[in-house]
Image (cartoon, rainbow, N blue to C red; front, side, top):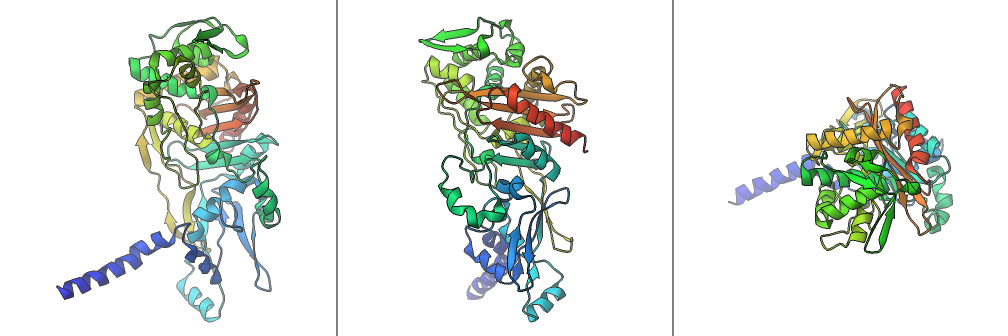
Length: 455
């Protein structure tokens, strides 16, 4: 028995050191990682199209400086390496401080008391698309997320206001105390916004699940709807007349969807929302805030009407809406979003590679196809016609999410291009940007144009 226990212990120690040790060391909470910097020069972070996003400059006196060639443009997604760590600098810390250089070279450097070069982390990010998204937002607050729906690759992630990671030391006190701009907040994953009319994909899905079809819906829009002394109006007081679900969705008719919400009830709408990961953990390796729905079966008509059109107490992040849109584009299946494509040693030899993985099915193929057709109609005849006739097909949904008592609204757009074989999903929010068609749709168009005419 003693021999068996001894052999088992030795076996586990070997297993731990060979298999499990990197898993324990590779944790953002493990401060031991930082001691690796005593013998390893922090590796580079690179885009999928070959651009250096972060590198370590070594001067003649041996001092090192972490340098970000694109400055503010990748601030939140790449992060920073001083005053703590954020973004990929935190997520990939272990890989960046690990060297897989040729072992004889490592031995030589160690004997000469010289540091080895850390590995290079190659991301899924496309620098060209990231720059387009950054410039398209301009000086406005908001966020842009772009995903590849068939794999989950994150192609672009922009958040504004931003910061310059090259001057994080000098700017730190200002940044952490600037509650007005919250520039350190990654709005792509940590922003919590009312979704406005982009939430109508959830309400439409709930109606479809309740009735098995959308063909039986009909509503006569008179421009406003009132229940229990609470009134909902359509944007600009528009009177849409008799609509089916497809035309109500294309015109983003608040009245029709408010009525739909009352008919469905809070329990049903909440169940559908939670099946799309509202109030749930998201399959993300980066820091994020959960999306929230507080409605239930006891909700009165005013809250039901508000929730059904994406107002009320519902809050969502751009990344989460990009994930829901990706599931629609990918026949109902959500692929796990990821940022690290592969890791190379500094000479370019492959160390490890990430494979696309299915997270879960959020909806049936038939449900996804129905939502896709509704979103196609938004582009052909509805609120996003600016995206029609571009040489490739687009499906999408605009949104205007009111955030104060004066009727000011955030501008939203979710959608994807090349509907027959979806390639690029985008989710865009522009704070205080007005309607979706007014502010977010032009940003989406620039992203689609850049993506399709550079492939």
